[in-house]
Image 1 (cartoon, rainbow, N blue to C red):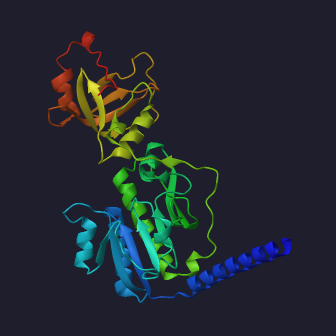
Image 2 (image 1 turned 180 degrees about the vertical axis):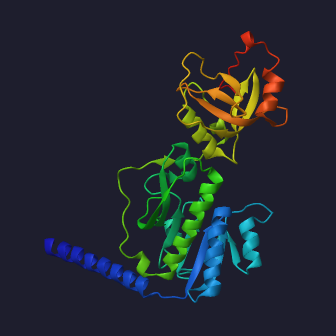
Image 3 (image 1 turned 120 degrees about the vertical axis):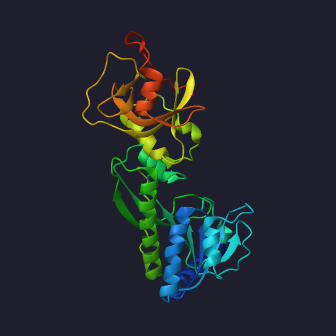
Length: 348
């Protein structure tokens, strides 16, 4: 009985080994031109799709290029309109109805949906994902926002093999490091990383299947998570945040949600923020103190670290956006000096 069990175990081991070797041989015997299925749904995805489509038209690397989107609206998204113009077939998530090995490789850029094992196994070369961070830092839905929110001085782009049923944990194909300028805003950093990611994806396709060899597992240390944000993130907590943290919040949410606070009991939004470096601390004033600074032509508000963050324009709820000078003339100038103790609060 012991001999039979041992023989069965050995036979199963040989079978699994044989199957694995066959899979590997099949995988790396696939050569260009490739059938490619691209998964993407927004402007970032469109940026990469443009580059991939240009590669299809200019070189003999891609034979077939189709697109998967998750648009449930009756109106076509910007990426769908591009696909239609370029005669790229569009499939709608999740009902793809594709056959095994119908496509050689899948490409995923800003798609946001979990890839299941049964779908992943239909691609002989697997699926490749562009992620705008240096994984394992900032796994998750909003890596660029969290890069700016936390004041990271360095970020990057990771090209990663998709792992079934999990987000952002696959093996690394390649990474590129990118410095983060201290005043860069969300749209500009997004565009920069999107351009780099698109080029990395093209390079990966040009060198398939060799680019999928020597993959590196992600490090177990330094893992952070970039959870999805909502509009409430833009409410400034003056007693909890330094001037730099408020400014980083402005950079991270720029073009998405304006910074919010409350002035004299009314909701107020803050625009065009900046910092003055090497400023002195103002310990004798209450946190949240608001005043007009003539030298910078800006409204400045005192933060947790007794330093100011500055704003060039503001808007009281129900009013139009006005300059700092107009705000001073309308809300501060006619108040006597002894009563000018304006303090903004975090209750919006």
